[in-house]
Image 1 (tube, rainbow, N blue to C red):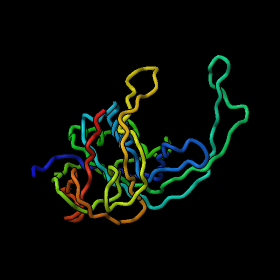
Image 2 (cartoon, rainbow, N blue to C red; image 1 turned 90 degrees about the vertical axis):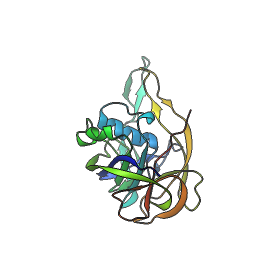
Image 3 (tube, rainbow, N blue to C red; image 1 turned 180 degrees about the horizontal axis):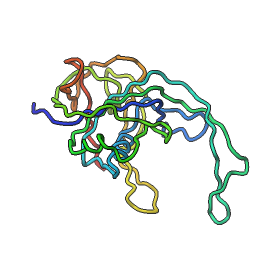
Image 4 (cartoon, rainbow, N blue to C red; image 1 turned 90 degrees about the horizontal axis):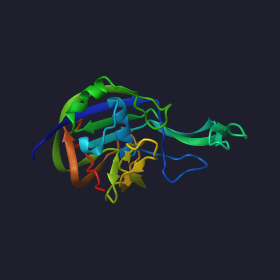
Amino acid sequence: MIPVMGLHVRLGGFSASFRHPLIVSGTQISTPVPAYSHVLGMISACAGRVVGPAESRIGFEMHCWSHDVELERTVRWQADKQGRLKPHRKGQSIRYRQVYWLPTMDLYVTNRSLRMAFERPAATPRFGRSQDIAWIESCREVELCPVERGALGPTLIPYPQLGVGGLVVRLPEWFDNSLYGRPRRSGPIGHYQAMSSTGGDIRFHIERADLFHSSDAQREQDVVYLHQWLKE
């Protein structure tokens, strides 16, 4: 099989929180790993422009030290009769939010022209909310060799995938925000298994398409899943 050249980017942070798409009130639950639309957003922040799915295949492996629920103060707003925002008459509020601590992400992209975006990012990537700041620890070229089976770490894998545990979620592939003054348009929705990112070095031995072994992997059997974008 012909290897693919790509980039391996290591990102770190203090906290991560990726809101579950079906939870709009009460305790804000976080998915254990980000959606692919969010990963595209992180890449776009570094590039200083919108990076779409047509530009690169992406894959990632994410690990977090632990997770817990924190108490967060929120500022509420309401619209007046002219449609302008003003502070809510009931003032501020508090709510609980699930947070993952000390996240690290190994990001793989097949578009090597994005290297400058990671070496000199235009904006700060984030693991979820604006305060979940991420930083880039390293960026290097790697050779990604396609394989039929291997040991997969925590990531977002298409559902169903036998032999892999995780939270089943429906998530958008990407968002289109090209129409000024209009709401963002969601791309196709996929079904995924969000694997636990707090399980340490636990890996799952699976067999499927789109698995690749990176030339800088720690072990010979380690693989990463490179996402195959859904078509609209």
